Length: 259
Image 1 (cartoon, rainbow, N blue to C red):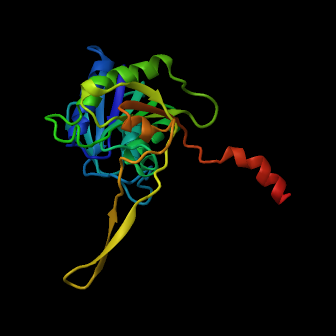
Image 2 (cartoon, helix red, strand yellow):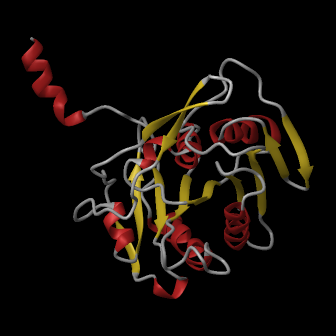
């Protein structure tokens, strides 16, 4: 199996090392793992692509490249310039912090997997929730490290892929517990926390005004059957996604209203 991996935390991120181990286990001794990751952190860029300026890439080692761009840029670089042939699988992560709930909309990690799906390659985003139970562990990614290959292999064997139009990709979030504390896997819809990102203004010594993005509390229940709540209960959440943003259930009613 040939696997392309990327992330949004950057080429030197600890979570990428975890993903390399997961990918190596999945690819097997005769497989290939190719890394194309951002040269610098790209958290929060979503599905951004560098449409108005070129992306510089650099070979750092055997099957290891860095790109001065977003995760989606990295996926396109891997598919259309770096890899000798199309990969069988694209993995994005393991993100430092959850990409459950509304975080998935902003996430560059999810954006990398989304680009893979748009390019017709099976793609999965992986993120590690952090909290008091795992943030201070020697390896805070140990839940993802121990269970990651198993969950991905289960999706490869039994997941729903392909279809007409926008292909399915998957968003996996590992709970904020030690690996031994993971209770299992739950298929979950995307949740929505009641609060969202904000900005905080600050004036610099030179008088210029800057805005800092502030996060909100992450350990907030989002209701039964959602990814955030599954994670808070100690379960790995698996959410099928598509890049189609249409609110399909509104089409008929809206057409009647506007007729």
